[in-house]
Length: 400
Image (cartoon, rainbow, N blue to C red):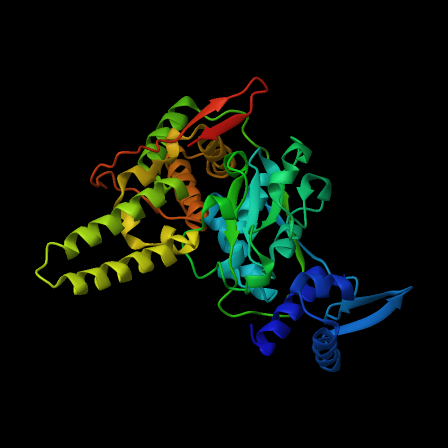
């Protein structure tokens, strides 16, 4: 990471968290005191931060142009003025843009968080460092008891037993090695393996939604709160709506990003490439050299799960595509979105259309989806069909 990139990352981190300690920054970015001193001096000279001492600790505070009673801008959303998810999304996008947010990046998670606040939908907000996850969550939730914040540098596996049933949102950074990660390391990949997000049982009880770095990073955005008023949920979806929604969810398929199965296919691709070499007429020494290069190519590829799971060839493997409707917990999450949408419109067909579209958008943030039913590929020896079971406590677990 260059010095300018590092300064931008430190600046973004401070603006997002408002107040941090000097030691926290040194640990977070793994930089020494001298480097951090130069960065903080530059930010202080530019009027971005101020520093103060509290005992032996040095505290850095972000300076904004809205440090007043209006620091938090409350935006009421009256449900009676909206008749669809898309109309509500339009208002959210407009308000975010007016307060200097990237509306393209944050309108989807903001609406998803609003749905989670008023239904039983549960979300994992994931992303790389300093992309605004905390600020986005704060834009909707003021009841922080229901949020598991600041999962940065923590392994979500250690927190499974601590997450309470009333927890609505988990903020989670990718599970990775900080020393080798740069701000956009994961953002450039369309497919993020499940192991980079968290335990598989969380990924379906809590629907993951990924926030990536905006193309144009904006600083000085104003923290806003969206408050939904005049909103009453229907207690139960009509059976006819549930049937239509289930049918459409069976057509919506997502790439399962199963690393174990992915590795099997990549190994088979390697063997196919080597077999093709020996069908060519060539000298033994040339063939040996070509085989060596093929083996080294796949060896490097298989070292990095982000690389091989984003290999375009894997998209043609039917086994790696899974219908959303076959996953019980994902279906339950979709039904929660449908309850919210139906309470706005009262239109069954519109509710089904918007719910499937919204689910597709969320899943597309961390993997790929398709409505096609005709993806086929050659058979392999191993099968990785995903299913689920419900334990004695009523918790749904996905089994790969």
